[in-house]
Image (cartoon, rainbow over all chains, first blue to last red; front, side, top):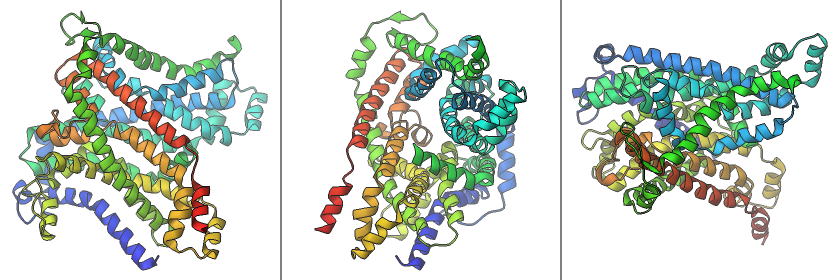
Length: 270
Length: 297
């Protein structure tokens, strides 16, 4: 195919893909009256700061940003620790029942989330965690996907000689994990970290269920509430939306190339 | 056993969490599906009544229908677009890295946030989409009122979100194909279009099937787009009511926990049946050899 034609087609496709982000910034920097005008505005206005101020004044947006950050950071750190520890163990150690247990872990993939949702909610009520960020962090602290994915990586990446050398030096199991396993797993940790952070940041259904009647919500739930409250005040809703996605876009762009390479490699192996 | 205590401790967190937040809830939801309960007053055992009602519940069947319609309406165009993007990125264009990131970005952006942005695009009077259609001489579409326009709107959002993701995966598949096959096709005088349909596509079949299976897993769970765009009832005539939205609405908006649990089991059965169908599709032997024979004839 003609190279110039392909380049042009890909560039147009990319512009269409990115257009919603551009238009979001346009709407967030104009007034609601500007948004409700025909023809539509396609250029930035001067009301961005004012709109963002409105968002923070009318709902506890700062609180929800902080909540989301706490949940995303805590979940990511716990997942990285528990998943890498389990993956390291499954990849490098033979112990009675290890194959059966790993098979059991894979079997948990088939449990659909809705099936557990109502009892999880009543369980949270029993614990007194409804409206509490613990209800988001604790159940998500370790997951089958991360353990499975990281085990694949660890099997090839950690040489047995390194483990034997550590044993000869008198290092115990956890010491070996910490000083031999973890450093080698660093690239895998980077991918799983971004993956977990992004998914936790964007999670909506479970936070909606378990936080809904509290003042203690996450960003996604706050956005949904903002939309309900100010259905007519579009500029404010858009300013809130912009604030909600910018941190994530930055986190993603930092590790984008590495992250995309891993997504593709994982799919081909699977 | 004592010798292996550290190993068992190391894998324990996942299994403990899964027992508490996975196994117990699933068993308990089976029990719940036999009750009438609003979460506050005492439970009342009703046997299989919830399931009897579910079988004849037209709203549930409509939700299944909507979910599958939206899945097809989004997956087919998405796969075609992904393939085109992947082929483009696999050729000798410049700035591949930047293009890849641009196409992938929607996949990591919050669905709630983008549903709000798309909601404004779909506005009947002042929406950007109707304005562009007007430029092309097309009458304004009632995006969020007409049942088929609603399903189209949801599908467009899914296409926007998943095209880049699948393009990246297809691209990886393309790059892993053996080069000598293409040289052989060239030597045999095959044109680019013929090569694509007779060689590339059959060889890429496992990767395409991976995309189909992944999109099925995600497609059966569609919830946020509908809920943000149209509300808990799925909009006019319930055209955007999906299975998971119906579950959410029954369980957590109407507080009907017993029937909600029965719906969850209904969804589980649909997902399992569909997975078996998918699995048989994947198991079918590839038709590469017969297609190559067809090409040489």
